[in-house]
Amino acid sequence: MELEAAKMIGAGLAAIALAGAGVGIGIIFGNYLSGAMRNPSAAEKQFPNLLLGFALAEATGLFGLVVALIILFAF
Amino acid sequence: MSVNPMHQFEVYRIGPEIKFGNLDLSFTNASLFMAISAITLLLLLFLGTKNKLLIPSKIQLITEMSYTFVAKMINDTAGSVAKPFFPFIFTLFMFVLFCNMVGMLPYSFTVTSHIIVTFILAAIVFVGVTIIGFIKHGIKYLELFVPKGVPIALLPLIVIIEIISYLSRPLSLSVRLFANMMAGHTMLKVFGGFVISLGLLGGWLPLSFSVALIGLEILVAFLQAYVFAILTCIYLNDALNLHH
Image 1 (cartoon, rainbow over the protein chains, first blue to last red):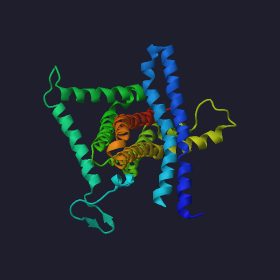
Image 2 (cartoon, rainbow over the protein chains, first blue to last red; image 1 turned 45 degrees about the horizontal axis):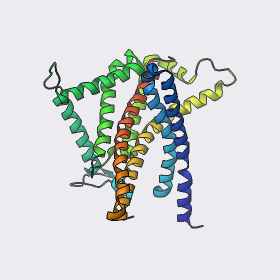
Image 3 (cartoon, rainbow over the protein chains, first blue to last red; image 1 turned 60 degrees about the vertical axis):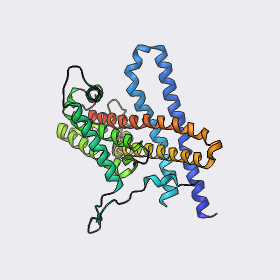
Image 4 (cartoon, one colour; image 1 turned 135 degrees about the vertical axis):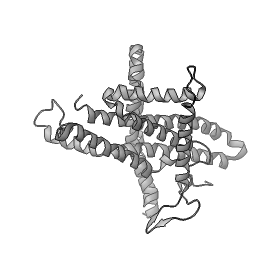
């Protein structure tokens, strides 16, 4: 296999990591919403935690994206 | 594809070349936009606090809102012990926010989309928090790596995991901001490229997408600055109130 083609395939595989980030963000927002529907008065206090969880979940996926970009542009 | 979407992240020299040995200290577009964000920020805060009125003007209102926002954030996450660190966290939050927001303007350069910028910010936070922790608790600060109520058999493993997670803090803090900004701006440029390549007939669909994405990116720009600041508060909380 040519090196260029292998790089493209590798970068594509590394981008699969973002699927996990999608699942994680969905779970976080879904659970926040269902919790907020049950107890709306407590919802506002947990909003910073929601954003924090969102950022942490998204970051793990973005590490995969960074790996893909390193494969594509740094090598 | 007409234009490479990564072209926007290119750093180039503006003005004369300044070199000290191997060190290139020339003024680049990155330094220009960093200076623009810093000056805008200083100007906003200066104008906002110049005429202190009981019924605030719009610009004073923005200043007061950002002040209370950050003060509340510090108080909620790190408690009143962290009050002396308010200036640092406020500066950090506003600087990252303004760099992100200036980057959203067309034809501008996003300073925070370069990992060296975010890594230096995160390294300052990491080193500072570690020093504060050791000053406040002495050698007992190492108790941070030993969580309470863990079975003795699991302890060696947990301590290693805690140490690794502590050391990877600056990396995750910087990569989060950098990757979010870079991915977002690349996506905007890719959709912009679709508009050009589809032309007058088919270009309207990606154009409307592009408008929605810019809204999303402005949200992300704010959110990432907020997350950067709140994680700094949480690390500070670990250092100031051990095991709380």
